[in-house]
Image (cartoon, rainbow over all chains, first blue to last red; front, side, top):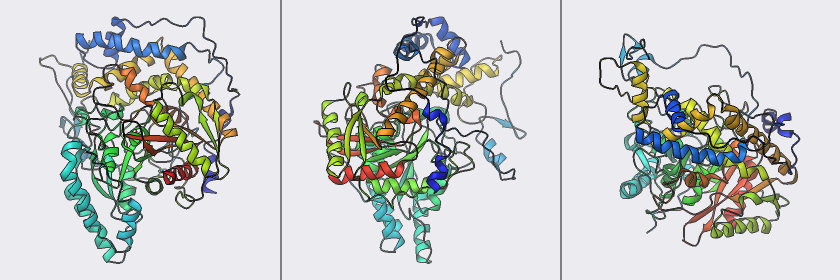
Length: 130
Length: 482
């Protein structure tokens, strides 16, 4: 009975999408050739807030291109009829009772910060960022 | 010389302690003695919790003496992967960026095991932030396979697998995002299981890829794995992805056998790329099931061929988002570059470059790229649609079969450095385990003897969502045939 209760949250229509085993793996006509350049890698390192050395930027340009080349096998498939799955469990709008419960202890949390002052996290200046 | 042991089992320890036949402190000292003797060679732990474990064991004995039942894990020494938060106790993810951090709370699974009488021996080594298949990506050096110290234990939960294998703990806890419990279990010759997504609360598990991560057990026996999973599973209001249902009973049906069970061997994951000796042991597993009355056939699940590619877009994309929180502001490392004009962005970039190791930096870069403008749909979106296809094809397969069978890992344990030169070579370790994570389904690795090199081989049994009891039963049959 517990099992059936739980199943309610697993079995959804999405699990029964009509996709026979003999799915047509037709490549898309405009499959992208490996597009990664060193300039892309520099840009992405900035987005990811990683101060990488020139050597590592060079190495990552090669390595990421290799991994993305492997990913071409799926980026070349025509899967346009299928909805994306972001999450295996179709649980949505999960609520809990609106009841006060203890949170983390502030001094315990701040004690682990690299720098703290007046019950706050202290950071270098945030203005004048280029 | 092998440092592997085959017990004692958690079930026997808990039974002995609960009935007063054994004392928890004695059980613990036996395990600590093996730690003292061999941890220098194996490096399973980032931290051994000797004094805390002694206090926990003494409290268990006091409870028994006072006529209280400490619970189903009474006095069982357990090794915790070091990406599980333990309040006041360093939790590092084997990363320099969290070195010295002591969490202000404990993971739900840690609380549940403690409440069931468990004794925590230590925090185990892993590939940094659980990204890897060998523990070679740990910032604190790799763990060694107790069967052969020149080989990796697998990963990312290699420390927990090695700790159980070497008898440092009777049970281990790991996390499995693409095979990080099952692959090290196979390489170390122990049982390892990834439960259904949502069955075990992840509150306090440091996130890697949130749509894939799941906590699960390492054990000497299938029964012990079921015991630990029973304690860890069940709804937790602190995890919004937790299935709102109590922990299922798993041990009661363990001995029911597999008569009439329909077992499908996945063709795409059993031939090409699988070492011949590993493939032979998978056949042994199928024969063991057949001898016990199961019906064996092959089944094609073609989209599983693309699982690896989908995984290595989805997991890095999610990790690039989850690991954005390590920015030198609230916890962990902070590196401030020299100069009067340093701003917060400079500090964050310097901190993250210094604190993350090469594999973590590589995956953050890959994920950031895959999610960036212009590429989102071609990479991440496409991987998500492939995920839908895998789920649908599994659903078709489970109309004809109750469970599916594959090898767990393509080879036995490999030598240090053998797969570190090219990231794709290492990633191929997870080719058989990844599809279950993408689908959110449970899967278990059970030992099936040794390969040509004398090292352990694991077979993997996969089932549909919430089929834990069924795949445990099948694993038990294989275990008994060995």
